Amino acid sequence: MQQEKLPPLPPFPAILSLACYHCFKDEVLPSRCSGCLRISYCSPECQKVDWKIHKPMCKALSAIEKSNPIAAAMLLSAVPSEPTTDVNVLNDISARQISSILDFCRRSVQRYWLGGVVLPMLTFRSKLTLLQEELVMFEPRCMVCTRTDQIIRMEAAMMGATIDNSRRLIPCPQCNLSFCCSTAHWKAARALHHGPCEDADYGHAGLSQCEINREMHAHIKFQATLVDKDGHFQRLKWAPPRVKAAWRSLAASSWEGQFEDEVRTFLRVPASFPLAPWIRAASDDLTMPMTILYGLEKLNDDNGWTRKQTLTIHIIGANPIEANGAMVFEEILHRLPEVKILKVVLCGPDVPRGSPAQKMFSPAMCRICTQRGSKHIQERASDTYHQFMANKGSEFEKPDLCIAFNSGASVVSLHTWPPTFKVLVERKIPTLFTAFSREEAEGEAALLRAAGATLHPDLGPAKNPWGSMKLRPAHMKLYGFSADSGWLAGGFSFTA
Figure (spheres, rainbow, N blue to C red):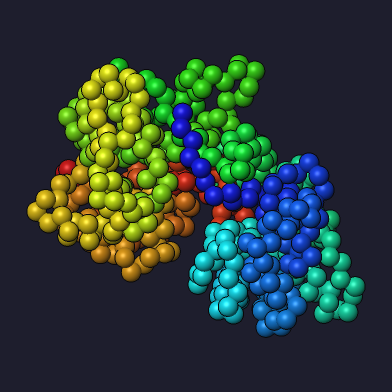
């Protein structure tokens, strides 16, 4: 089992001001930041340590309320006059509010940096960090009218009422992660909050938003056991240390069916402990090899690919998560005993750059694979895929599968992806794209079709049975959840 250190992004209770934003403790009643009133700390010491990082965003958020009447008016005008349970309307209003606040904060933070203030822990940036964006994207909102604590304060100020800086939104007493601005609005939201959630498939079928929130809260508690002495969360990188006797189809299977016994055996989880938290944590990275295998099975007419001497996978739009995931890709060799060499090419502008000697190497392998003589070769290229192909020229080797995990091709880097779509189709490369959400999957599917791809009916846009089981609130939405590779955006091949 290998664990990778990640930046200490606060868990949702801290983002929602229900736990300390620095040390993440929720056993004590935290005090809210007096500037932005958005986050809380358990002690003056935690606030002092965090202030250098929080200061630019604190000033930006507080300025909306205190010194920017245009931004305030835009937020207030978007609030519906009556509560609604139309999820599409609520998500649309929330997205517009979040976009407006993010735009304002980007300009404000940029002005902060251009003012000549230099913080030792940060460098100048024109964009917000993920830490800063999450403060806006996951700000608590009333489930049926989209009001935030800040909007409530601004409304009170317009009416000349005394402004109460304490929390005004009322959290659900069961999950503590969803809110309403009044008891009347909670009555309106009850059916929405406790009814089956449309995102609850593949391990979450029939669950409500409240139940999924409680599952997320339980996972946060579990993840706290994977925090190092510096407070950094760690990903559970794990592949069962065994090699299957033969390839077995993944059709009609599930995370529990494939890994339940192995999690209990190899991770030595006591019989009295529930397995769900462990499977959810492991699935966050195992989704990559399992989705690759699922895509290969669907895109090939027979099982010849399972008997190849060398299996080549190109991961495009790759990032540090895939670059640090060498161990979990070994699961492909564990399930394909006839494959002796796995070659993984990581290609993308965000692939960590290293010395020329690091561009191709053999990651450490488990004892069983080493004894069997199996090899795992990894190549890295910090470039777009179409440029990578052009650079290789006649030396380019067609992969067995080209896959993009959570590319965001329909929402980010719109100028770089179309040339890649074009060469994937023109060179007839078996391809699969995944996405965080339905909207992203549908957007990418449209782009792939526009490039001339004929999508496999089982590969998108559709739910991914091998997407991560760890759900989180969807970005830019009030209602809904997303997961790493939770959706298949589209797969195509040219075997016919």
